[in-house]
Structures are given as C-alpha cells and as structure tokens.
Length: 580
Image (spheres, rainbow, N blue to C red):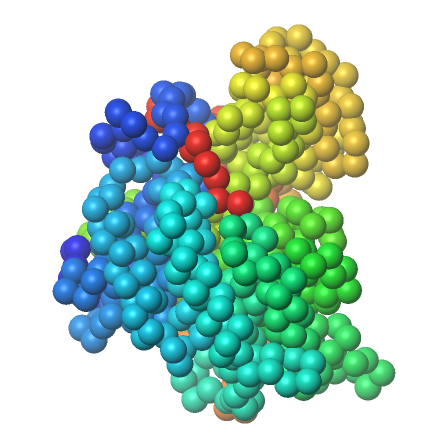
C-alpha cells in the first residue's frame, strides 16, 4: 500500500485487545542504534511503545514519494486523497515519537525523506500565509532536534520563531496569526465557533514557547515570552469563550466554557498550558483546568469518548500535562482514555477483515460506544498522528524522576533506564518493577484500589506498605531488585445516557447545530470495568442487528480470565527522550 491511495473498506470484525506485538519487526536492531534493546518476557497487556511502532509504520505507508514524501490527505479512504501539507508536521512528529519510544527500524529511509521534505517546504517560504502549518512543522523539527541536533535545523527553528515575531498581528496588548469570525458548520460535525482561532494561535503559542524553553533558541526567552503573553491574552479574550447556554450568574470566560469544535479548542488549551507552565502563570493553568473539565463532561468521560479521536488524544495530553504541573490529579483520566478509546480505535491487524495496508492507523470516530457505523468507518491520518503524540506523552510520563526516586504515574508497561514496569492489568492486580538504576520508587495506585488489601514484595520478601498520597513508596533499592505490588482487581458497572445518535456523522462539537434533535428515548448503556479497562458494554444486540456493516467495539470478555498471558518481546530503552 506504500505511496498508494487507500481503498474504502468497511470493517465488521471486533477488535482483539490486548494484541501480541511480537510480530512487529525490529529486524536490524544490531549495530549502533540510539538506545538499548533487551529480550524480555512480559505480560501481553497494553504496550504504548508497541502501539507507537505500529502507528509509525502505518504513517510511513501514507507518504507520497512523488511529493517529497508528504503524507496523503486527512481522509484516509477514497480515491480523492491528495497531499495535505498542513498535516505534514503532525505526521513527522508522530513518526519521530513512534520510533523513539519503540526502537523500530521500519523504513528509516522514508522517515529521512519526509523530514527532509518538510524542512525544504518550511524553508521555501511556502507557509508564509499559513501560520498553522508553520507552527506544527516547527514542533516536529523541535522533536527531531532533541534527538539529532544539527546547526541546519537549529537555524531553521530560529527562523521560524522569528517569522512568528515578524508576522503576528500585534494589537496593544495581544497578538494573533488568525482572527476569523465565529463559524457554523454545514458538514454535519457540529458548530465550529471560534475553534479555528484557538487551533491556529494555540499551535503558534505552543511552538514558540517550546523552542524557547526546551530547545536552544538564539532568540532571547524574554522576547519570545513577551510574544507568548500577547498570544495568551488573545486566546483568553472573553468573546472566544461563550457557551451556547449558561447560568445567568456565570461568566463563561472566567470558567473556560465555549461553543465550538472541541478538538480545536483542545489545541488552543495545549498552547495555553505549554506557555503557562514555562511562564509560571498559575492563573492561566487554572483556566486550562476549568476548560479541560468542561470538555470532559461531553460524551462518555469514563472511556474518553469525545466525538473524534483527535479530541481524545488532545484531552489525554492535557490530563498528563495538568497532572505534571500539579494543577490537578488527572492520571486516572489519562489511563482511562488510553486503555479504552485510544487502544480500541487503532487498526491492529487482528480484525480479520482483509484490511491490509492500513494497520497502525486510527479510526477518526469516537462518538458511539458499541460500534462504528459505516458512515464513520474512516481512518484519519492526522488523528493517527495526534494519537501517537498522546501515546508518547503517556509513555514518557509512565516513569519519571531520577535514580534517587523513580516515579511511576500510571500502571502501564514501560522500559526505562531507571526501572522497567510490567503491568498485569486488567487481568491481574499486579505490577512488577525490574530495578536498574533507581534507588527508590514511588508507584501511583489507581483510585479504585483498596489500600487495605495492597501488598508489597521485594525480591520475594514482604515489605510494609508505605503510602504517601496515592503513591506506594519503596526505598533502599539496588540494581537487579524485583518489586511486586499486588491488590485485588475491582470490577464495577457505570450507567450512562447518551444523546448522540447511532449512525450520525461523528460529533466533535459542544453544539451539534440547529438541524440536530435529540432522540425521544436516548440510548442508555451499562459499562463494565475491570480496573479502568472497559471489558463489556450492554446493550449491544440491537446495535449488531441495526446494520450488518456496523463494526462492533469492546469485545473484551477474555480480559476477565484473571491470568495475564505472557509474551516474549525485544524491549527498547532510548538514549534520549524528547522532553516536550
């Protein structure tokens, strides 16, 4: 399928999760590589690095060799796909991140070609009137520079920051690259509102802030942050933050409430939060927190069903960044989104549907919990790129800290230079740490864990459970130690009523528009969780029969067996991790 347009294929088979990823080739792992490969036997549970490798492979297969290896269009299926350069930076960023966390050696030549094509495009002046393309491209090259610093890329990144300084429209106390009007949407996905304003200017704010603080910019931080403050002032203008309906005594602009495209607003929030963390702007961080929680109330927040997978991916990044900043504790949110919608919407090759060539890409739709209707069976290249960036942020955050204190924030598989995390969830309430250089570890247990039944074992010897907040503290560790933390897995049901209609185009807005009417009898669902993993959802029978081409979701009853399957893998620990 490489360098070809996709063909439309309707899928009806169920996802199988977890999927054994031993089939992902790491051929050619010998020799000088940017990290260490280790053979290991681990639980065959959700592995973000393996998922990233698969997505990277899928994205590399979307590149057009006749157009400097630019990716094909955002709509992945159909005969009309063309080069779509505003997504180029997102795709390149995702490819770089997928390779960095997995160590996959799949088609390095194509990655080099698309990076070179992007650099050529950005340096050519082709983005003079497209600030969004400039910003997204800059973020991709910042990632590349973090792993492979060169004078050429550094010079180009400074030129792009300077272009923002030169081109941003400056008012007395705010700046913007785009100041368009409020927009409706006749395409069926809901009201856009001021979403484009948030998306374009938020990407610009994120790019200049990241290069100024996480990179090696020759432009002074003071100058960049002065521009950043003006972008922030624009992005928080009251007219951009007005909800469709609101209590009379509430001011929406004080609470991050809006009417518009949730994915675009989430992009703006990522820019605001990136700037606010570097500027130590606590007030703006709290504003982002309020807006995050406003979006979270749409769809089904227990699994991250927010209309489209782009929104879910950005919400995952926001949850992680807010938690890292200490503004709130949203690690449980992030883990729910990852284990459910993000894991479930990736095409893994286990479908048995003849869907060859699109493995690794993600379905765009995230609007209905039991199935994807034929109208929404579309894999989106840009949303795939966003999902990889969310997985990378989560993979990086699973283990943080230093050798004095390694911090495990989510119970997901991860190999690192401090320690390796082996998670047996959702099958078993167990997580193992294989210690490398860490001298102590703080392991966060999910909110559902009963602490009175938790146990800690180091090298076969029982230890007292030392609790600090939501973390188990284990001290006095040395290289080669094995730490085991166990607890009973809790199962529970959550019941939701969903107004979004079966079979409608995926909805990603706070306001579906004037032509939309809620169902007279909204659908009600019972979601059964094992830990934070959705293992069963009812009712589903009527959704199976309503259209034979409906693609059923969350067929996960095998995860209730109580014993995690094991798998032999080649794990990778990179020498350098992208810091942003």
